[in-house]
Length: 356
Image (cartoon, rainbow, N blue to C red; front, side):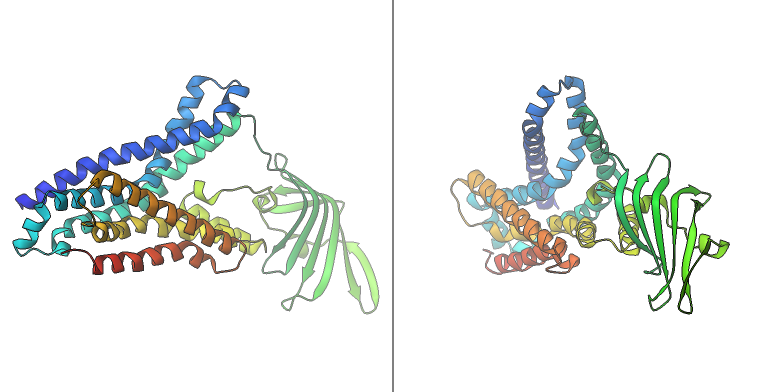
């Protein structure tokens, strides 16, 4: 028990110090990338401070896996350089048994990081983006134009020239109705439509359909109006960032995209990333254990280089797989989980050849 307390005390001190360092680096990077924009727009210092404050939870989310890897690798390498690890092995305790408490901490952090991201990071990151966009005068409109949306599994197809989000109104609306086999039944045209009590109320609408070989125009009946239930959010110039919403909101957003017949591969890969990324915290402990004992010299520099190098490899691999998922080269779930699976195998190989 004394040995475990000694190890955990040493580990936590290194982990907290490295976490602070990596968070600081990420915050300074974001500040420097936007510094000229802040200066040119005359953004107040207090506003910049708030933007960075809202960004801190996101940087913690990014920094935890790197800090975990560095703290574990440095602590074990330092114990090895001081021959303390050899004394542990000589007492009959294996490397895996000695580091088991770290594995438990890694697993707990994986679950904790997921809930931290879902309950804290998404809200603060959304506020950061909102405040930053307002400060830099980049506010975007939800109005949209040249819209085509499929609803009710393709049975109802909307085409509108323009959507006014503030008024919840569609202009120059064309709606095509199809049967279960997606064969044409009829279509309606209207100068505009307003969202009222869960339905689109038409202004000047006419319904067109075939009766035998004759094309007939008549007034829109109540039966067809009841089918116009696609919510206004579907027609918005939707710029939702899945990273800035909770997992439940992301799931609903993806469901909306699929229902509307819009591309959803990128959103799905970002959704799966919410579950895959926290798991890397547990994986890096295995990797750090495998990396321990590789050198007795320059332990700090070597551990830092290995941690940053591993992080770069992971993020570059994740960027590539996420792009492949976005363009539907691979399934979205592969885009999010492939880097994690790769690191699992890499960690197991390192652990297999670790000094024990």
